Figure: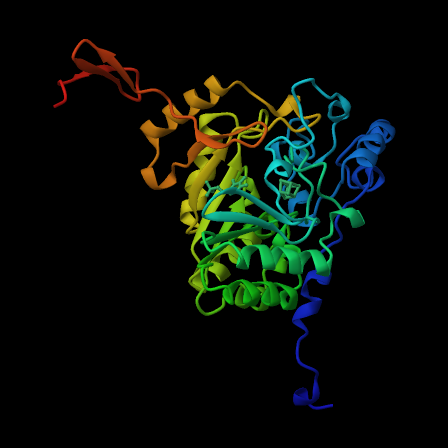
Length: 364
Ligand SMILES: *Cc1c(COP(=O)(O)O)cnc(C)c1O
Ligand code: SF4
């Protein structure tokens, strides 16, 4: 057979070529990511909250390190079954601002569109852990999706639609193109922002076809990548990010501040610098939400503010995200700035990043 007679390469088959995703306690044990003795406990957690760890991320785990920051994000922990009184199934109050299924409309000019309930990996600290997973209840029906588009079309104040989930990059490219074309057809919707962990967790899914599907005339795409540790930026993840950046898609990042994962200056600095090197502007550092069974990931806000103060002194402004708290219950996000200003008589006391105090002259 001549070479030209070979069928064209099938891009759809690409994701299937990657090593399989680990989806059970058994598979984690077999992969050396959990001790055999922990299997029953991990099964109990996995029965409660969805479990998935892709081969791409499993390969970054140092199996000899019991405190590995990647393992901590994805390998279940028995403490997830301990629910604290302050924790909530819907920590940031999505339900309170959901006028129709699939839409969360909290701020006038932008709305969330939850197109799909599944993710490539399931983060153990996920703020929507009660809403995501492979269960059928997490899928938006075609009728509900129509209702969501109708809502967006009927609200001319909505300038930006934020596609979230689950993970919108789990859509097949064809379905993504359909969704993007429907949004582009709404004249007042100018920006589509995709919140995704797929470029990190399953970079092979970011095909040329998917990247092309993000774009439609009259609609500007932005991609916000969820990344928590520099080690997540594997060569494959960097390539996936480059495919989007080369296509002219602006990229920002979101990081969750997590105890035992990235709660020190050096780890955060390495992550934010690596993102900038990949053409991704660090956007938000989220204080962890009060999601059920996640107390072991939380740290005091004052500690996060001290980390931000130390980072401001040592990192390029390009590499600094805004540290934010999503107020429990649905009142929205607020910046958690370290306080640099205090009144002192007619003047202002300004504290610099190293703790030095300076007096600013009286203001007109
Ligand atoms: C976080 C969030 C947004 C986006 O907020 P930005 O500050 O624009 O990134 C929009 N809607 C809801 C409901 C949100 O939770
Ligand atoms: S990728 Fe996002 S939505 Fe999915 S489990 Fe992680 S934090 Fe939750």
